[in-house]
Image 1: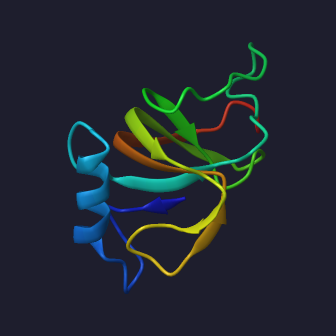
Image 2: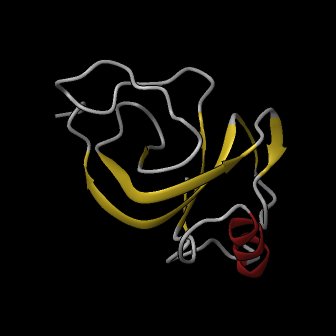
Length: 110
C-alpha cells in the first residue's frame, strides 16, 4: 500500500490519477494498493468479507499491521501479477485506488 499524500520518489502521480479517474473513482486517490487473493478479516467482530471491487475498503500492509487505511471510496482494476500504475512496484491481486482515506488503528492487531 502506498500513501499518495507522501508518495515515494519516482511515483508518477499523474498516471495514477488518470487510471483512477478512468475507473470512476470519486476524487483524486490518496492511497494505492492491492487486494490479496485471499480476503482477510477487517474487524474484531465479523468474519472475512469479500471485496466487491469498489466502495469502502480497508487497506493494510499485512493482516497484523498496527495501522490500517480506511478509504470511503475505492475502485479496482484487473488483478494477476502487474505493476502498480505510476510505480515500478509489481504486485499480485486487484490493484486498488482509494480516496477519502484515513489512517486508523487495526482492530485485529489490538
